[in-house]
Length: 57
Image (cartoon, rainbow, N blue to C red):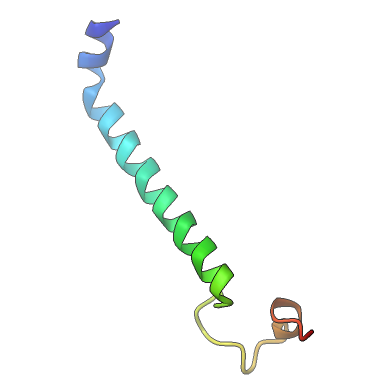
């Protein structure tokens, strides 16, 4: 088992880094959603779906 880990250490490290990046992106998207920010980044002034994203209560 230890030999397999040493043979594949580069792949394992790259996978861990990629998972960390994806987790950070998802966490940022969740934080932005809770703050009411749009995920498209271009604003809602002319967006045809703005009524669905930001429903008025």
